[in-house]
Image (cartoon, rainbow, N blue to C red; front, side, top):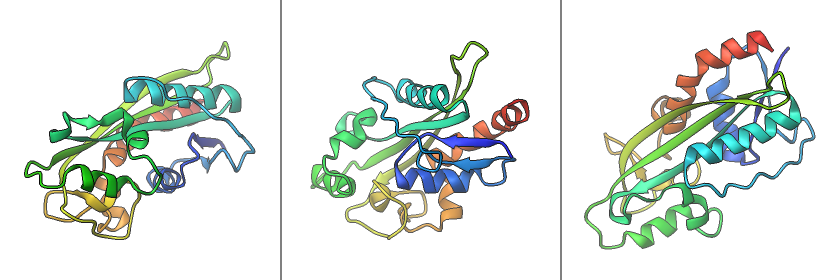
Amino acid sequence: MKRLLIATTNAGKQREFRRLLDGLPAEIVTPDIIGLDLAVDEPHDTYAENAAAKAGAFARVSKLVSVADDSGIEVAVLDWGPGVRSARWAGEKGREADRLLDALEGMTDRRARMVCALAVAAPGPDGEPVVEMFGGVMAGEIAPARRGSGGFGYDPVFVIEGGSTTAELPDIEKDRISHRGRAVAAALPRLRELLAEY
């Protein structure tokens, strides 16, 4: 069976990608499964550039069709930041939601959105990967306090229409409406084509 590489070491993203890519005619693998230890810098100013750099680097080394994303949260009162710097802005891993709650303390405008740029990289004939981009956005607002035990990152404070945080949703529901879920859904037809070719 063909292999499709999830080009991230982030355990939360790996879990989501495994669910979102389930049903493709491929064995879904992660860097640890194939013994690949590769760190890729994310110095760029856009989600798309960072995602493309990651997917391309992993495809180049592994010779596998690879998917990677760069995602972030954008908050109205933070001038639609922290955006592409979301992970670094939060500081300590696991404190993302708390850091955001602290930053919005006393704020009434809590509009926000989650943004995902998904890169699909396929090994090219000359060894250089060919990268294609897909995207997804989920609109919502920031809750006044953490709620829910699912998901990761900003999920406990990101409220969607209807009033639930994404951490309170069953996985299947979150995957259907999330920024990452929408980006993967857009990419699935192309992934099926690529897996038939490689």
